[in-house]
Image 1 (cartoon, rainbow, N blue to C red):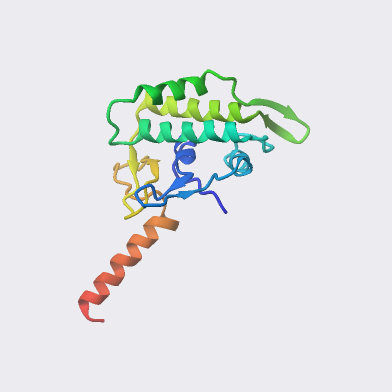
Image 2: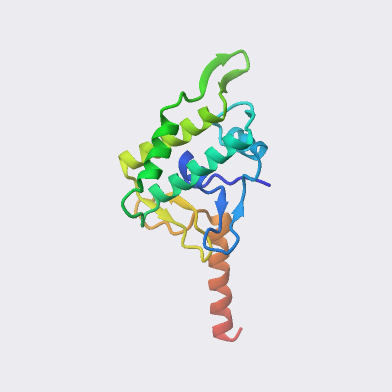
Length: 178
């Protein structure tokens, strides 16, 4: 399984590890602690994968759902439970960085990963950039719209944008009889 980082922010990329949320069975990209640890490295939060036990994985997934609800553009007033989850994670020490002969090394455990994600979510909540939900039919990925016109519709062209454009092209071709 390959992770995709197209949301424009660490917290939103983490929220995207649960795909197709409107489907009866959403895709879970972090079914194990090892998957969460691999995500931490691929996202650039940590240099080496941490050990993530079942309880820590549960805490990370709980944080992920709170982040999604808090940052969704159609979010209602924040649920107190989501605020508590976010604040608890943000209060922990984050990853530690050090310059080594091999370059910058980022170390930490699962709570440090959670702190980094929570810190990124707090920054989004503070700065309030344009956060959108992908316009792809089934896609529920959130992303920061940094386009000049503020009209970015898809999380990424490689997945949703191409799919929508190809379907539109096929519909036009079918309508023209060619």
